[in-house]
Length: 325
Ligand code: TXA
Ligand code: MG
Image 1: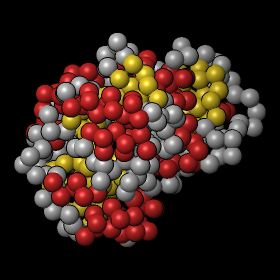
Image 2 (image 1 turned 180 degrees about the horizontal axis):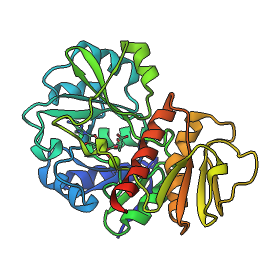
Image 3 (image 1 turned 120 degrees about the vertical axis):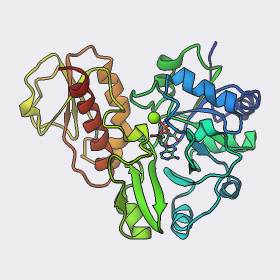
């Protein structure tokens, strides 16, 4: 049985905190995407996340905190650049990788000497974590490799009957995962493009380096294919390139003429990248469920949040190329 409760109800929050305390999993909303949470200090509870998601054990989780002050108990050191980022972006969609303290179970960090931490800004997430009173480990609430859920209804379809509670907090405001960074020799390194754009980060800490591909501690979010719908996905420069009619078209703005595709989803009528990101995964999930042969996705400008979305589109298109020949 899965209960779906309004996350703004204090009783629902109490229920969630109680479940976490007894080692159960809870789906909760964040400003980026929905998360599948467990007590970060409870290795057994965290193991259930991996089972439910069919996620490989070498893929570490993000630890979510309810107060900035909780950071000291998790991280060994907080470099100056991290302090600046925290000051500007927390609570919010930025995850920072720091050297971990012993107390964090290895299953959370997949044995890495580092831990990824963020303080979400969604009021329901914050309320839940604070009511629980301790850090919550949570990946996005989707089967491994699939598109992240941005509404409670997406999760219901994916995990119905498999989690005791889904807190409904409405449609995620950002709609795309948090940006992940680490700090190396005082410099900020981008691991995953997400809801905070590189431009925004650079305004605070100056030039950011890209994590070089093929490093030793490769995290699966950085695998060449990930975040993918089941349907084949092809990136096109415009609707003109569409050849298959039994297709879906994920368009950035309103197309000038009707595209050949049977299904059309417009990310933002006014071609606004922030609005597009908020619709990105939900439109992809809808097109994936529309029984089409192929999803065409219009190329997005690779600035601001466009970069995060293009990253995910490229990965989705590569997955198909890698598994079907
Ligand atoms: O917006 C988000 O970040 C959402 C919400 C629920 O907070 N969470 C999320 O979690 O996207 P997940 O597990 O789907 O993606 C976390 C990414 C993975 O690619 C993982 O490999 C990486 O973070 N990661 C976690 N810990 C890491 C570490 N210590 N070093 C490098 N990468 C790490
Ligand atoms: Mg994920």
